[in-house]
Length: 128
Image 1 (cartoon, rainbow, N blue to C red):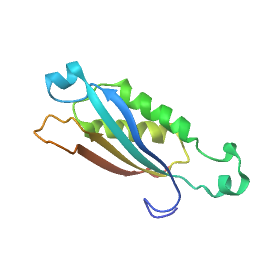
Image 2 (image 1 turned 90 degrees about the vertical axis):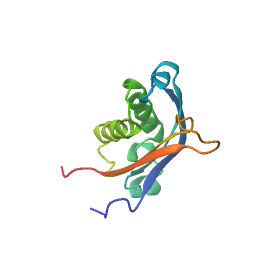
Image 3 (image 1 turned 60 degrees about the horizontal axis):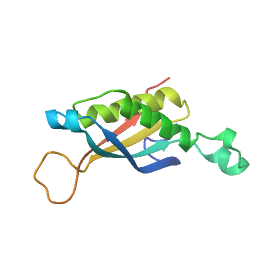
């Protein structure tokens, strides 16, 4: 097995969702935008050589799993949202060895004129 977070990867960036995650009552009632970036460590040697979709993990399928994990449960913390995404991706795709997930919250309830609050989780699949 390769060292964690190195090698081939499937990358999805700026996935936008509207959700009701947060601690504040306004966040839970009104919702807000969230953006998710993720990198999934997958050996892409075979699809690169065969040009066959059957030899890889579909980024469209990863998106569907991320969307369901994001929308499936309301959570207070974006850390928990990210962990829920990690768990869903690992459960759905046996070929994913590691994942980096960033959850960005551009309208976090803090007095900022520009920018966003975000967290990032780095997780490696447990030994099988």
